[in-house]
Image (cartoon, rainbow over all chains, first blue to last red):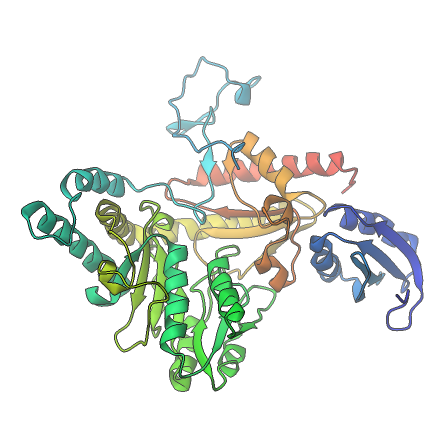
Length: 83
Length: 415
């Protein structure tokens, strides 16, 4: 697995594997301000709800869902901090 | 769901009795009801409590309509007459002829028979089934069976409000399409689908259209132009165990089930005459009230749609704001578990449902919310029933912000 999507390095990885929604979203919301503007966070999650809810949260909160990488277990969902 | 209480009738107010729900403030009396033990039933989209007309008709028909409608003696002829009248009544509301309507064992069975029978009848035309991505699971599961048997299924996606794009639906009707399915309105978010445009496209392409109208029959005027339509009596205040399958004359249909002399060759088995009679009685009653009821409920849902984002931070109200069912709204409260919300709202006296994964037996989020690309956790569907009042809705809006705030702080979320 590559830790990059669209060429951007991952500034912070949130390990939410094994955690059910809404926990992965709560972790993302808490930590997104810890990275600089324009930096990418990777949320590792295996709850099927996270697969749709992280991109949906990005749309709602005007952050950018950069892409989702399939892992052996779950996904790495990449989010760029927009503001 | 057994831990959820069954909705009860409002008890009479006893002004000098304290109940746990009102301890401290004493029972509050508003109009002729009070909060003491009253559960506001906001889950009509799952099932509407039985209409009094249905109950009365059911009791009468249990006595008068028990005999075998296929036989020729007096009691049998009476049962046959009652069944025929029920068919005629339902046909009248749906806008078809009585010989185009059949009762099935459920709405789901009506969909299964409708989809699979139409596909069978159109085998020579092709093996392609086109469906909306947010159809009821009964449509999608019939499609899954069709796929396992070698057919193909194309799901037409929806926009963020859950509405199928009519042009995209039309362009999916490629040669070899045997059947297309589009719901009248969505069961989880209330969005009304562009059925008449889809029907025109189907007509032009020579493809029959099946409309799952379970959420609309008895509530809103039905679209026209379809070839098959399905519905479910318990959604309009009839008894459970009665589905409706309407097939317009000239629509090719071949039963996917073994032949049976009963059910007019479409719906096998001994007909449940009393339930059909009760279903028709409820439909007559709710149809007579439907315009006034829609006018009453539409603004109550508007109130929920506009007030909730103002009262609660981080809430996503989903579905079409105007082109929607009058009685239904869904929204998602960020950072809260759907199941926890249901339990807390149940304790506070509200029966609602949720499309969140933790509330589903499959532990997958609702395919409807997924297809819309909206938040699936913390989801609540409010669907008002005949008994729902403005007071119930205001009480809900009073209670919900505190419930959400408590659950968020329990998760360590600082809003």
